[in-house]
Image (cartoon, rainbow, N blue to C red):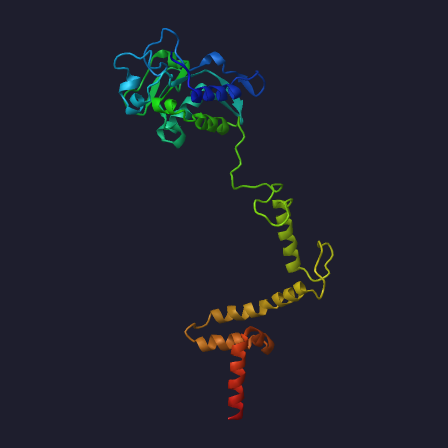
Length: 302
């Protein structure tokens, strides 16, 4: 006998979980369980609400697509959604706005809507429209003024593909479901993914350390208010003292940058002139320093 597949039952459960609630100031018109149907009643013959035991000759829900022919089982492959009205995010959301949103997703061929073959709906409560992925039909009967019919290609129900992402995205878009945090986004109290030698360290700890390092870099030794500030003669303070001496060198380089870059000797001479002898000596590798000393000694004694 025709039965409801688990993947469409999951969509039904999701919609009822958020649209079938007690009336209150936020949600004022429930979607009732009887308004969300998958399997047609006993007299229903042909169409996506029927499985293989109820199809008819040349049933459009089978013959018009290879996806339907290859996916024909005892499963129904359609979902009806009835009227509702909810207030969320400062707006009222209804069956009509839901249907318009759904059709827009299908027309845009969003990845999570590609198993939908057709949507029969009314955007204004007066005219029935049909969005058909195969372009076969454009309308439907008047019952669709009060409910929206969604057909799924039968191969998707046969395969049991998850159909909830599209509907969860709608509920998120109207504010009934909180957006999920991206996988690569972390909160300050999240533990670090990598092993830093301390399993309790958090993103906030790292940010605090970076702020402390910034304070160290711009503050003199023994500045009050810093967390464990470096001592006056510590290696870190010696390094900072050297770093603070760089602005003069940077200014010299900036001055030279406006000059003719084809005169390499002028640039080299200018840079060397801005450095004390001991800084030049520190920058020369030992072997080159020895070679230079030998050459200078040779020239001085020549």
